[in-house]
Length: 68
Image (cartoon, rainbow, N blue to C red; front, side, top):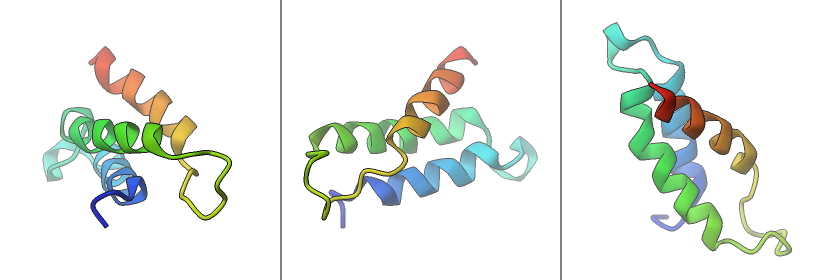
C-alpha cells in the first residue's frame, strides 16, 4: 500500500480542507500531497489498473500550498 498515491492524496486533501485550528491547513497537507505527487509520477497513465485520479488536483493544491 505504500506505493499507492491515492492514500497520500486523500490524507492530503483532508488536511488541506481542514481548518488550522483543528490540525489542518496547507502546511500540514504539503507533505502528504508531495508524497502523492511523487508516487503519481511513477505510475503509467496507460495502465488502467493503476490509480491516476487526483493527479491534476494535486498539482493545483501543491501550487496553492507553496504560495503560503
